[in-house]
Amino acid sequence: MKRAMTLLEIMIVIVLIGIIASVVGYNMKGSLDEGKAFKTRQAQEQIRDILLLEYANAPPEVSLDTIINNATLYLKQSGLVKDADSLVRDGWGKPLIIRLKDNNEDIEVLSDALDTYNAKKKK
Image 1 (cartoon, helix red, strand yellow):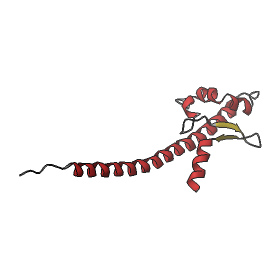
Image 2 (cartoon, helix red, strand yellow; image 1 turned 60 degrees about the vertical axis):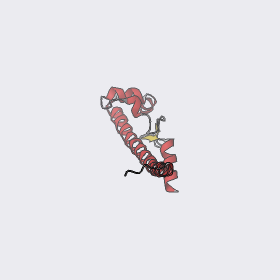
Image 3 (cartoon, helix red, strand yellow; image 1 turned 45 degrees about the vertical axis):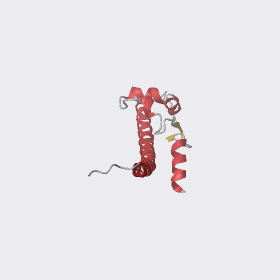
Image 4 (tube, one colour; image 1 turned 180 degrees about the vertical axis):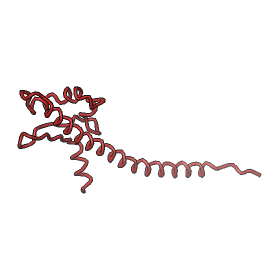
């Protein structure tokens, strides 16, 4: 003789599934943030390298400051980037900050969201 499941048994199963789903979801959020951080770090390196390469190949009258101020245009012209508009955004979708370093001979690519993520991770 088959015994049907009671309402209490069904409710217990639903609660257990909810608990398991919340634990998995919480762990996935950390993985997603790590993926966003990785994408941002890779984009920072790629942008810096491509813009320095463009500066090296540019005519003498083109300054590094000009290249930085028109970074998306130079990234598109390089032929090395598939989607420059996407590349200049970090993993969280916020625009990257591209500027000259102190010595005006190098490029610095920064992300406020990555800095925030790294600060949280250190705690």
